[in-house]
Image (cartoon, rainbow, N blue to C red; front, top):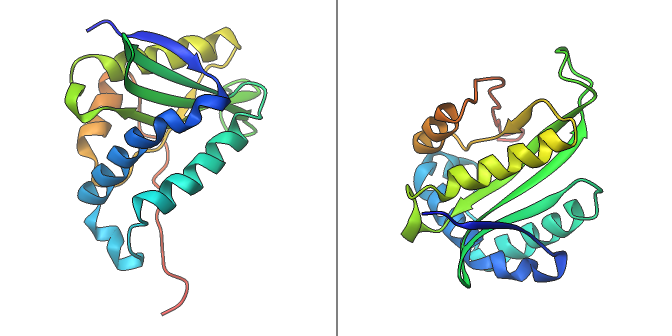
Length: 165
């Protein structure tokens, strides 16, 4: 599959709701251990919050929503941003962040994710960014394998801990 990759305008962000709902369901199935910290949000509430977050990101100068489509069908999307990188490694002054990558359940493993990651890498490289950070929910071994095949390496393990009993 050779999807067309393009930048989605902020005014069209609601086109992503269906795919976000698929990702929410996927995450809840892949990470049932997180239910001990709190229930999964409803799809409506989750989308409302993510939509607001996405619109806030899109106000940043180098942020973008990249969509993959075939004709008029939306196959997936990636949200990419650029942040300051004042860390311990010499990666330049900025680091890319892949905030979200979603591929429609019906076309997974057909190259859509690879095309979106490639477009994100190309966009970031064009801005002089050397490294892209990617977070994967614990338990989503398929996503870890995918990113590692694309050249990603382990960097940070993030843990959650309840602060009250």
